[in-house]
Amino acid sequence: MNQTLKLKAFCKTCGADLVGIADLSPFKDGWPVIPRDILSPYTNAVSIAVRLDNSIISGIKDGPTIEYAEHYRTVNALLDNITAELAKWVVEKGFASFAVPASHIADENNLLGNISHKAVARMAGVGWQGKSLLIVSPEYGPRIRLATVLTDMPLITDQPLKNRCGACAECSKACPASAIKNVSTDGRYESRDDALHFSRCAEKTMQFKAMPGIGVRICGVCVKICPFGKKK
Ligand code: B12
Image (tube, rainbow, N blue to C red; front, side, top):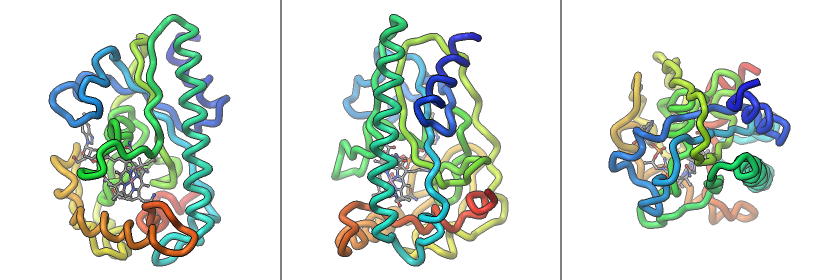
């Protein structure tokens, strides 16, 4: 088995449901990452997805439930565990690695993570970027959470998938903030505002965070409503 297949198999034994590899070069051209030099030592990014529990996601109505908030924390912890294990595995093979946290907001003013897991997942062929701006996987729709490991290990990279949203507007119709503009793209959106009334989404998650028992910036309606997630 070659090194790429071994790495993917290792991630699965740690609990990953989907794994893809992205070339980091397109991210080194001014795309916002925090800290600025975080990518310099690395050539590839491993995108890892863990699927969400169907009954918990199906229980979401017009906003998050306490069960979803708990599940969000549990799956983030699982992802951080998988990326820590993978980072260790890579180092043991003689290469460098960096496990990017699942849900850390590195810039609170601009609402940015260290690197966008969605951009990496799209380039790694884990899914396409839907009208909701979420990564929609063929297997589980957007009912996945993501994390990333940066590395200089030579790996065979995967390719982006074709967008399959078509004329579907379910996420746009269901969004409790009326934030999803119902605009599709074959490649990627130039900015978040091309797809979303971004501030509406951001404000709504703040309102939900203040609800008793929630405590985190979540919503989940666009995750639940997507027909690609309901299929399995
Ligand atoms: C900050 C944050 C938020 C903020 C801002 C959201 C946002 N869209 O940026 C708020 C609080 C509003 C939020 C809300 C939600 N979030 Co949030 N959030 C994050 C966080 C921590 C950082 C996101 C970030 O840096 N975005 C930067 C912007 C510029 O990037 P972007 O949204 O990915 O979109 C651009 C890129 O993808 C780019 N792109 C696409 N392809 C390519 C290719 C290349 C080469 C390049 C350079 C760029 C590029 O095109 C887009 C437009 O510019 C991530 C974790 C992480 N580190 O990624 C989770 C994350 C994005 N959130 C997630 C989720 C699920 C949600 C919510 C559904 C809430 C919930 N959990 O119920 C909503 C949905 C919002 C939405 N429709 O986008 C998941 C998404 C999973 C998935 N299936 O896609 C993530 C990945 C967390 C995780 N660990 O899984 N979130």
